[in-house]
Amino acid sequence: MQAAKVLMVGAGGIGCELLKTLALSGFTDIHIIDLDTIEVSNLNRQFLFRQSHVGQSKAKVARDAVLKFRPNINITPYHANVKDSNFNVEFFKQFNVVLNGLDNLDARRHVNRLCLAAEVPLVESGTTGFLGQVTVHVKGKTECYECQPKPVPKSYPVCTITSTPSKFVHCIVWAKDLLFAKLFGDKNQDNDLNVRSKDDSNSKTDVFERSVDEDLSQYAQRIYDHVFGYNIETALANEETWKNRRKPCPIYVKDALPEDAVQLNGSSKDHKNEEHEPSAMVSLGLRNPQEIWSLADNSRVFLEALKLFFEKREKEIGNLIFDKDDQLAVEFVTAAANIRASSFGIPLHSLFEAKGVAGNIVHAVATTNAIIAGLIVIEAIKVLKGDYQNYRMMYCLEHPTRKMLLMPVEPFEPNESCYTPLVLEVNTKTTKLREVIEKVIKSKLGMNLPLVMVGASLVFEDGEGLEPDEAANYALNLEKVLAELPAPVVNDTKLTVEDFQQELKCSINIKHRDEFDEEKEPDGMVLAGWSGPVDKQVTSNGNKRSVPSSSSADDVNSTAEDVSLKPGMKRKLNEILESHENSDTLQNKSDVGSSSAQLVEDDDDDLVMLDEDPKQGKKKRLQ
Image 1 (tube, one colour):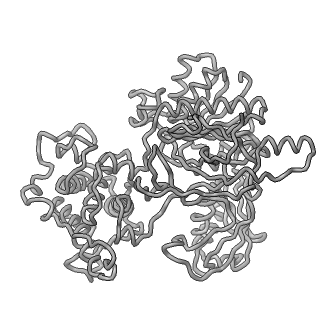
Image 2: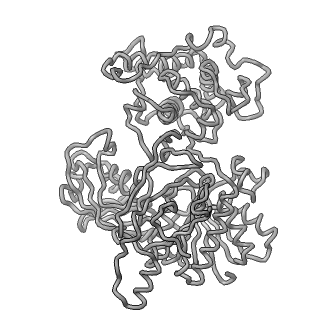
């Protein structure tokens, strides 16, 4: 341990515990990469940080905190993004083991690929509430992080969000991704909200635009009446939609609030708080975030929050993106979602609950982070000793299974189909190269700086060091449809896609297809033959909920699903390695049984895959 050089990626909930445990276990050369700065919400579990550290680099503060009780060890912090070009394969090669405490799937895949290219062992981890896991990934000996499908953000049909919501999460998605974005975000971004007013439905005027001399209170009421009143009436006009559904009720300001309450909204001097960030709750004297507001209170919060954005944060309007740590944004989205829920007969939720749905939050348990950090160090020591026989995927459970709260599962061999040739069904006559790069190559394949070739012709390259004329030429190609590229991409064309930073290369076979189902295939293209993300749901602290995304999170009443693998598809690692060492013929093990993939969210509210379900009875535990 004293001779080992360790790289930690992430200095958050798991990272703080991990750095402390590494230091106390005898590791003396530790490097930490973390892009984030410390926020107030981190302080309840990221124990190396204090109130005075808010706004400072997590990596640097964590280093300083640990050096106070372990001054003789070397800790090197990097306040940077692990995807930066200087953290390349050569950088990773200097380490004996890499330990992940990351908070998003994209960064995990990136680190996994760098570790594979550098041939450095990776110990992956994640927690959510009382659940957690640690997995070991060693090139050629175990499966890599991407050998099994990973979750993709759950999405909802546009028509459900805009017209027929049936769950509170649908109202949250509408309030966050449509209404909030329309009022305060990028004005040029596509938006499915109806922008035509009741008074002039044939006009091209956007009802959300505020005239220079328009009174702010009148503007707020006009927006309220438009989205919760007129738009609902418009939807009711289509009787076919409501034959087998409960009809919504239009809500206007005059229905929700008495006229005098509208005039006095937020005007109480007792609740003014000019010293802190603007808050509709403070202005209105609402103090309990776990209280479920009435329709009247939600209406007051909606109107007040909208006014405060224009009064106190006008310079930000046009560039705002919803942030779960933005109090005023959470208040606005909670109120808007609840008013819409009231209209559609959906139970209302408290701000505390709504924030959890909108921000995809499963509240962290510090003890789980500590347990997982300890297990990471145990597996890291095994890796450094080369003790592959005893590598374990470790699962921390909420309830005992076979009298155990910590469940060990043996790792498995690499998945031979992990990087097989891919097939992309796409309309080559209408789809632009930009769409393929953004929706498939970057989003699904997780490449950071891709290079795209058609045969021997280079049609796109991303990254630093490009000549101005090259960059301009590639920018032009991005806006061309596939069939009109300098090297045309048509049916049966083979694309070669490569990311030099990740040292990853794969082939994509193009299959032309004229039409796609807008609801089932919203990307307008389908990627096949890739063990990539799958839509999943998650069991968290006894409740089942859908995998959330930047645009969605499901409620706790959803039904969990499993991704099953074929029996006999995997074999135990020690059997594989022993048979290689003894030059024996490998025998397929059909008694492994179906392997079910379980999903958890990590302590910073993002996703991570449990590669096996520790509760599967057919899994054999090592004695």
